[in-house]
Image (tube, rainbow, N blue to C red; front, side, top):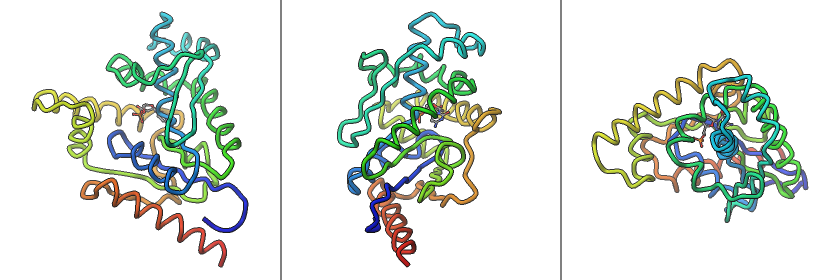
Length: 232
Ligand code: DC
């Protein structure tokens, strides 16, 4: 960090299973910044739509309904929270029905407009700054971020990590996770609104052969280099 009081914005984008959440949270903790998992917000919206009987493949119905739920994402890196209409949804948003439907929901422009506004409000409210992770942080939400990182890893590495997170060891189930990751990446990268894309000024980091600690240390090094360059 530099010595100025201006809050710092660090963004991490990339496909599923690159370790974005773990790494972003740890960077936020070590630097004393707030933390925002924007995927959790798209998942929370999806969960609310599913539990309120909205047909998630009907973009018009999703667009209208998306104004209704009150989604609140806590930004404390130590204890991230996510609630919808005051109810903690941190467990169900990680389950299969939400994972299967979230790409369709996150392709709807009205959903994105609403959540992007909440994401920018969170950053403005962060006293020292924020580490935000997602798919369009560097391209759309925080185009003037102090540091943009685009995380990648091979699809096989990403599937193995997701499986480990879920405690899955069966080969067939791991293959199904890989298929699902590839499907979601294709959908997220090809949608018309705010597709998953590396910002022109983002630093790409391939995490395939790196431990989470190594990725954290590398990115904190990049943050410090930027701060030093700013102080000149
Ligand atoms: O990071 P995640 O797997 O929890 O994200 C869930 C989905 O949300 C992902 O398939 C794409 C979408 N998403 C998005 O469109 N934009 C973001 N900034 C974050 C997530």
